[in-house]
Image (cartoon, rainbow, N blue to C red; front, top):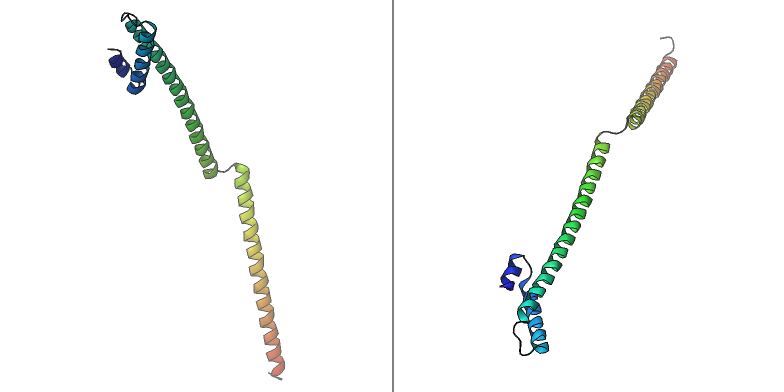
Length: 136
């Protein structure tokens, strides 16, 4: 009867069976001629096992809640990092825009310098050709 109640409460059967045998042997050892003490001892064992199971389930619930809270915080941090990476702060955007503008300015200056050098080479080439052909 108590074994069925223990199974109903989702307590492990082998622990109940082992404890039940130990309690029965102890009671029969202490009171060899009396069967009447075995039933209250089994009831007491059931109460102790039920109390321990309730404590275990409460501890599991606390642990599960802590794990869920930790997981929730981790997910929130990942979401926050993803938002930060997707939409940088205005100062970061301004710095990136300034860097692009500087790069574009340097590129324009480099193109102007190359065009000037090429034009100077072309002018020197024309001047040398004009010197080579006297009287035109």
